[in-house]
Amino acid sequence: MVVQLTPILRNAEERPETIIRPELSLILPTYNEEDNIETVMQRVDKVAKQTGLNYELIVVNDGSNDRTGTKIGSFAKNNGHVKVVGYENNVGKGHALKTGFSHAIGNIVVLMDTDTDIDPHHIAEYVKALKNADIVISSKWHPDSIVETPLIRRILSHGFNVLVKLLVGLRLSDTQTGLKAIRRNAFANLFPKLTVKRYAFDVELLALANLLDLRIAELPIKLRLNSLFSFREVWKMLWDLFGITYRLRVTRWYQRAMFTRDDTIVKR
Image (cartoon, rainbow, N blue to C red; front, top):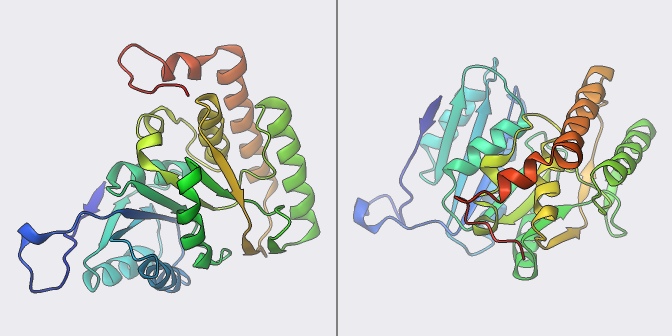
């Protein structure tokens, strides 16, 4: 793993002892996004400034084999609040988010996809909503959401959500949309217990949050989805969902892992 960490300064002339501790950490997992990553980083950076919080941008290069890493590195050189984390092989979005979280400092953490499907202008709204929640998630099916997506993706999304409700017990309208904001102190001991490395990571994260009775809020999103899932990707998501269900319902692995003697997590 390669990690590039740059101190966050008020201005370029300040000395290290005046480093500001970020209040907000934004984690961007990316894989082979050379055409989009610069635009996404610039847009997210602009929106983060509008929150009025000291912030850091953590970009996790999940084993890209194109010029994504080069473009991230160039952006980081000109922006001292950017951390770059990378590793050689592609592991998956879930692993990238978990890795990014381990480097986050801010007590408010935003998780966001980098494929330009999501409008980042919602970030400030999600951060404010954490005053009354431990995690704020985006929902394609919120009444106020604006979503453009092919019919087949709508059908697959609804079908997957029905399975999540039946198998995992999550009473949420959507788990998979790629923008979430969390209170770091509520999730600090939860993240190390996460096992899913790819797309169903969101289900596992929310299942454990639900297990701990953490407060979950759903907010609208502006979203444009043009790409389609392959059968292989759908099967992998289902397989991961079955694994989560098995650990939650059958072996009760999560319950044992979350409430061991050494953990400080306290169920509400």
